[in-house]
Structure formats: structure tokens, C-alpha cells
Length: 377
Image 1: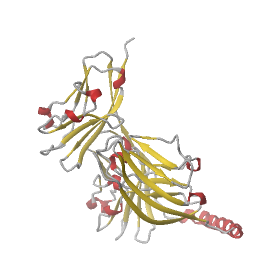
Image 2: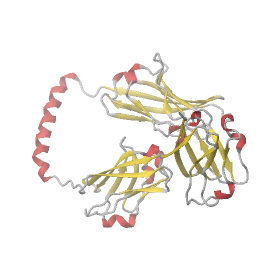
Image 3: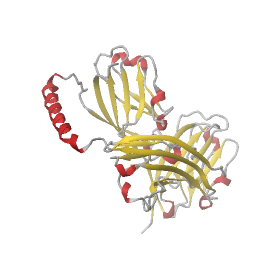
């Protein structure tokens, strides 16, 4: 697929030296691109690479030493299209023009620019004054701690496990705390990004990170009873994280905070090399509309098999898998999207992803399966 290169200029951003993190935004549709690569660069540096990601892995061999250990991207970036760069521990040397460059086999697809200016927060002669002020504040906070109404539910952290491909998972958050009018419930991931915001009387979904859009819900009717649990649809390994549920008043007084650790487990399948075939399971109760598509991919995002209702789609697959993969089209309507791989060898050991989407590319289900092909001794 060929896409004309698009260049976008983004307004300048100003931050202070020592700020904990900054998200440099960049979005581009990369879901169906073959071997897409996104690289963040600063052309005034040598080497110019700030961060590079290809398939499901970071490629940091050519990264400039100034950014070592300070950059990250979402694990699901090239699938979700959210190519934003997280930069931590901001320094004065981070000032410059950043370019988000998206390429694939056909060449350059998109180029987005963002000017960042990192300013000095304190003048040297004020440092001593600020240290003194911090010390005074710490003393006051210590004295007020016993009177501070900061309520935690018993069992501060909850661990939840679910298999990749499940229709949904519930992240529990319940309390007897009274919810006043205009109170707000905020769920965040470990990077402090908003997963879902709900204020009594509105859904607040516009504030959430795009990665979670249309996948998260809370039952507003249960808020009054103290149930602030979050439902996350179609969890994948990229959703493994520690999430925080915070309840606060209209005046930002915190009433409750609770953490939930979510572990999304990938199903394991083992087979011996030389077997006639192996079944990679992918089943769901999801309704399959007309024109829906089932795509199996390997960890490099290459297509193993594509099946759209009414056609086999085999012409889209990687030659390595040709004539070795099948799905039973008659079972698709019942929610069985399992893949049969013939004559598995050690080269087939991989993590495979089964994705079910509508004609308009809305994802209905995604599941990962880890295949281990063992060599006979």
C-alpha cells in the first residue's frame, strides 16, 4: 500500500527542567501497514535518533546517548496508531525540534514536527530558599497526617488475572465512602495516563488516552453505592499494568484511592516438531457481522492468514505460511476463529495474534497465543 507523505507542524511546547515526564503526541493509522517503522528524531543531533520502534520491539541501537533510558512508547503503538513518545526527567539539552517519522516498504508516510523548549525552573540564588520552604511544608504535613481524611479500602492493592482474548475484565474498586454531588472518579495506568474519567452527570470519556477509547466503561448507577469498578474490553498483553482508581470531590479533595494489578496471560500451546498439525485456539461469543475479517499475525506483525466472510484471503499471507494454514469458515459464525498450522517446525515457535474486526475496522476481539514447537531428542 502506498500513502503520500504528510507533514504536520505542531505548536511549540514549553516545559521546565526536572519535570518528570512529557508526552510528545503523534498519531497515524498504522494498523494495516506492512513492516511499519516509527522513529523520533532531532536533526540537530548526531546521531539524530531519539527513539525507534518496529513491529512490537524498540530498536535503540542508534539512539542518541542523551536519551538513554528516558524514552518509551506504548507496546501496542503500531497497532493502535498512537505513536506518542514519553520523555522522562526533562533536561535543558532536550530543547529542540522533534520529528515523528513513519515509514514502511513504500517509503515515508508521515512526518510530524513538534518544538520543545525546556526552561530552567530555579535561579541558583533561590535554591536554598526553596529547600527551606520544602522542609517547613514537610513538618506541617507530618503534623496534619493523623487528621488528613484520606481513606483506603482494606486490601489496598488487588491482583486480577485474565487470559488474552477474554471479552472483558473487571478491575474492582469498591468503598463505603460517601459520594458528594459533582464528585469525580479517575482511573489511570502506571504512566499516569487517563484510562477513564467519570463525573456524576457526565461520562468524561473525551479525557481518556486513545489507546483505551471505546474499551472502558463504569456503571454510573452503581457509583452512589460505592462501586467504582472499571470494565476493560478485549484485554491483551499490552494491558498488563497497575491501574489506580481515585475518587475526589469537586474541590479536588481525595476521598479514596486504590490500586489494581492486572495480569493478562497469553495462552500457551506446545507441540513436537514433526507433528502433522497444531491448533491455535481462538474462540469467543462475539457476534460476527457480515463482511467481518479475522486476521492471524506473528510477532513481527506479518499476516499468517486472513479470512473475510465469503473469501479465504490467503493471497495476503506471508509466503512462509502459504498452504500450511487453514480456518474452518463454517465455524466462524459460532465464534470459533482457531487456526490450524500444518507441519510445525521450530521456526514456527512464536507469539501469534488473532484479531476479529468489522468491515469498518472496529476491533471486536483480539487474542494472543504462544506456540512452542519442541524438537524431538
